[in-house]
Image (tube, rainbow, N blue to C red):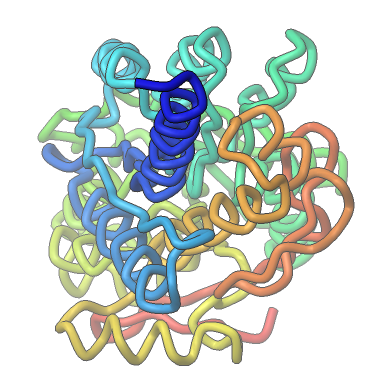
Length: 373
């Protein structure tokens, strides 16, 4: 074979190889509590991410490449989250939509940073996730969600004004998420002039909180702010009702799930919680909401935030002209807004979103909706 022919064949093979690489799928891991007590959050993650991937693929993909998902279950357990992160790294996956619980995201983020993987959480709100990443020089750890300190700055002063002169109890479940948000609310409420009559951590997963209820009753609690999740919140309310004890429960974003009402029953009536301004009401979400509902699922809670993470990663790849996670993270932080179902998102240099806004929601007859503060 002549040299020119050999070179031509080699060049053709190289071009074919490059074309094949260009058409490879883009795999994004969706990591969260697929099983366990918080599996409803995992359902929200999966369905939101899949709806986004389907929509992007139907529109031609990312530079002609389809998005495929790898579902990973961490049960919101820190140790399992690290194992999941190591598995994702070993599989060569470059992008992660997750994790959910801050207690999982924070330890997993170290694995992702070391492996050069872009992790973007649609739910973890503890400030340490991105604060520590920034201090450590980890540019690929990001969050498409709000922070506890911002949520505390919103609701703490409101509680101080709304319940001035009332007996307020602050509880948390000792998790990175629960205690983090409870402490943020305590700090801003105290700064606004209202001090709690009781501050206590509970043990998540217990089935009997009657002693806690009795203690709160002895403090004549009018208002209880609880940093934690819906299984414990529902039990506390139900067991308080059994003692004939009624108080105003205020929660963070974790109870945006129909399971909260299923656990608490009618005792949940009137419960208040903070959540980022209703993503379902945004015009950008209309088509996605309709399609998800048509599939028999209500896109509540973190569904649309998980959807938005997939959109952000896809736009980052297109903007960077590369699927290198470092370049994608840099492109997402360049100050240009990212168009998502939860609105235009702009990331700061830490990887947090700018200008977050909130609603105060109230549970009524098995459903929740924003109220006027």
